[in-house]
Length: 335
Image (cartoon, rainbow, N blue to C red; front, top):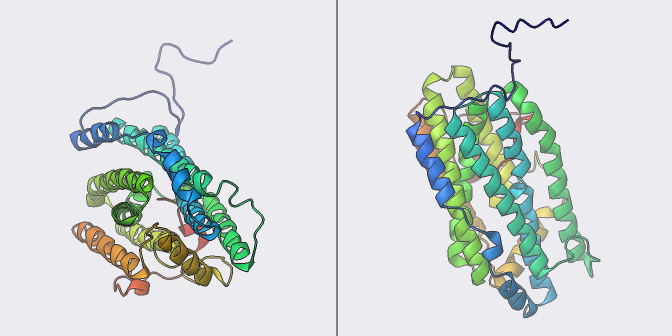
């Protein structure tokens, strides 16, 4: 005998993707969603044969250095599951329809970015990082990448657990700094690299990251006026954590957080210089610092309007709210 009372509406469980719900009243979000659809691009249209042709004219170390950089980037562009999980949570929490739709486009974007990393590596040094090093530099470069990926694995559990501690809108707002910095980095590389297919890939990726920043700004401006003081403090802390996480590829990794080989920075700088000599123009440390300072100005102006403090970032000479004791569970992998 059924215990359900079918004469009344069913009792839907909490944190469930049912019942389906739609709303169409957030025009700012819908406008950004339509922009996301219009700006899609195809990684298969990048001329990877041309990349292979150019790579054939480079020496082993130059090809290795370029593959090395893309492999480091992949630690951050391995964000498809980050947003796929966010997409599930956005449905479980019945966020506005346009917001859920936007998260679906970012998930697609991140998958494309990750594939670009794989295609690039496969085009210049197909066996990387599963190759036999010929000398100490190659061995250490390989270990740099593997330990970078290990750090990514540390943060994955922290990311999953973050949904038990933070609301989704606070999490999304916390991504602002990373998206702003990524926009600058990819714009710079798209302008400066002399390898034409990579130039196209970087320019397209910069367009995506600009849109992702616009998404985080949208979420922030919708949520910030209603944030509690505690939530505002969480955003400040997460922005600092975002710098700590992304600094490996966009600046220098802080020594007190990352678990990396003692030779990491020295070998990384050597590999970057070799890549630059091959026409793959990775930003210099001065350019990276400038990109972060621009991101701070950009994000800080938005946060200040809502009484959210920017964290101090002493690595690049930025004063602000002191954030101490960044732990593994505070770092949310995002790019």
